[in-house]
Length: 367
Ligand SMILES: [Zn+2]
Image (cartoon, rainbow, N blue to C red):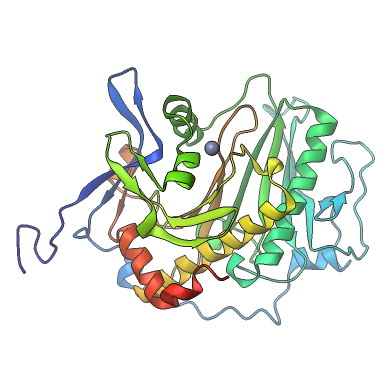
């Protein structure tokens, strides 16, 4: 039926992300808005589906895995089994030994950062990777679990050694379009000291919303619905793609990038260090399911997206409920650059329907 919106029956819809949209000074809605607009123009990668060849893993040099087998040297900070050494010490050792572990945390190539050239370095960057060769979380959730345990071991011990005034940021970049320089799956962690907490532009809306509106994540986990900043009821039911006793995985209501999947721990925890080993294992399954869902749904829509970022929404200096966002690497343009708004041509509900059609309702909760 041809109507006002051409072949599309639905008009573009403004959607506020319930977790990062709030009222500022009683005057304006601030934070993050997405526009779900089925009639919007296609982007280059929707018009020209990926022509990438399947990745051949067998003959590829894998620098990070070579560190695990002792072929390359690395400054090891921790593994999934425990803490190795404090990289702030003067006598840190690079090693050429085989390391028996599921994942390893090392100092990054650019290991230290500071406020200026003269200043004594006040922070480090860490890289964590599974010791088996994988490129994507969907390939092996146990490897992702080991990776997260190694990150926890590194950061927990560094905080114990250096105090809670250190700031922490955790994320993964996957694929060259999201800035990853190595194909081996790896996460990054920044750990640095500053007198005042540093909050980036993307953290503030999450924290403001949490302070103003209370813990919507706990409410969503128990009641299965919440209100957004406009007072609209948002149900999670039709967007869920996986659930276990510890986490819920769903297509985000107001996607920051089209096909964004959000992994939410059910328990009220501010950051990765507060998760138990079992919860980390569940979170890893959730991240793997989310990664796989983006592959499957984007492939079904004929523009397979391999590149993505995994963003940890955490807080290390106050109360919060952590979330993990798996964000496909879509280029931003136009209106997205002049406001904190993105455009999505497929709704999260449609994405979930497609995922459920591909996988069948039954398999969803069994994994
Ligand atoms: Zn909570």
